[in-house]
Each structure stands twice: as structure tokens, then as C-alpha cells.
Length: 125
Image (tube, rainbow, N blue to C red; front, top):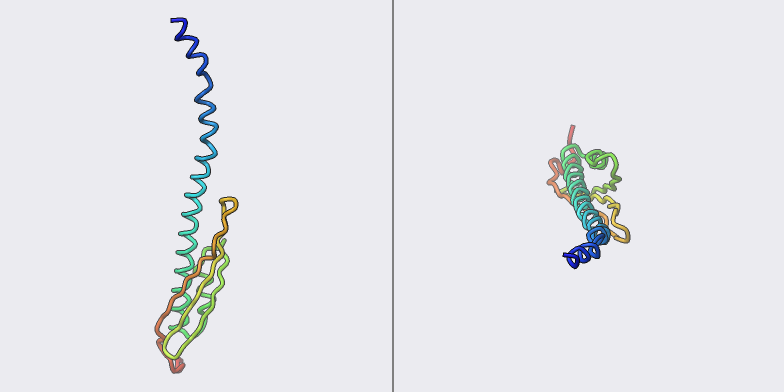
């Protein structure tokens, strides 16, 4: 019985040390999960802005850049560029992605949308 008590005393604090050693790993995994969600969200915002900009530019003939920037959530900075061909409008949106994981370099989110030009002659009223 005495031997059993000695063994228990020598194991005291082991769980606390294991927990302290595992917490940084757990936090890193949680940050990576949050970062992945943020990357997906910003890509969706870029895609939505590109489609909106191309649609507005194709239907109205102007205002696509402003519509694309308005389609993006307030905290994000979008760069919208519009190009027109004889029968289509192409909108490209680029949004920088902030990193919350230290040391991680992430490329900007870039989305392109092409819409047919509703009035290629430019004879809108």
C-alpha cells in the first residue's frame, strides 16, 4: 500500500505539464482553422464583387467599378478593373488577405467575371 502512495505522489503534476505543452499546438490549429475560413470568405467576396461589377457594367454601360467596390464588405479593400470587348464585359477584382497566423504569406484573392454586353453598339438611352 505504501508503494502505491509513493507512485501516486511522483505522478502529481504530470497532467498539468502535458496540458501546458499541448495548449500552444491547440491554439495554432485553431488559428489555422480561422485563417482558412477567412481566406474562403475573402475569395467569396472577390467573386461576388466581380460578378456585380461585370453585370452592372454590361447592363448600364458604366458604374461597374463603383458597384463592385460597394458589393464588398466595409472592412475589405477591393481593386476593381473593367475591360470591354465588342460583345463582353470582363471585371477583375483583387482583395488582399490579411494573415492571422504569424509568418504565413498569403496571395491576394483574385476573381474574374465575364458578362455578355447587352448593348455592344452603345446606343443606350
